Length: 239
Image (cartoon, rainbow, N blue to C red; front, side, top):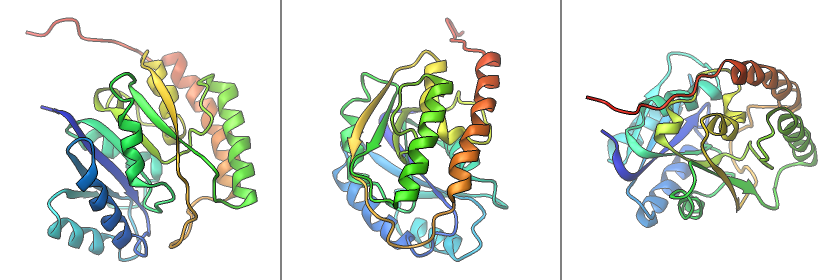
């Protein structure tokens, strides 16, 4: 049974050995000031470096940190979906292991989660390169044209979702780009909140220009198919 007003933060990991010590430190610092009881779930997406060993050491040493590990690399969408499937708290958070967003900003999102079913960050004053910023803006424009979700920055890796909604999101490649749209398909409500953004200081980004433009366009067609076929239901009574 899910615990009321508890939060699990999903952290997808793929070859992030250079970031994980800082991830643990900053997430522990956030746990100490979080507005609700909080834990962390690493999802190791088939890393080929020392990430798994470091994750195990962290989880052995700190009781609020847990992990699941794939047998091979399946991609970001699979890692997020696996996290959704394993979360047992009432709230599910998401942050990237590159820490280009700040864990402390989860408290900004929590201020609104009582009234909305998903609260997502919007990266203010982004610290990415010109090429990355431009490609993200184009990708967001493409996605908004297809989904009509009204989101300015769906790629922001800082979100909180009510877990009941997160668990009803179907698995498909590219779902991480459509989390607000998938909540709206469930007749849920979404809100955007400005959050801080920082440069990546360690590790290597796993997506290039081609991924940010072609990938979202192809995924939009998958979303349109999903929207047409999506079945939305609610249980009225249970005995």
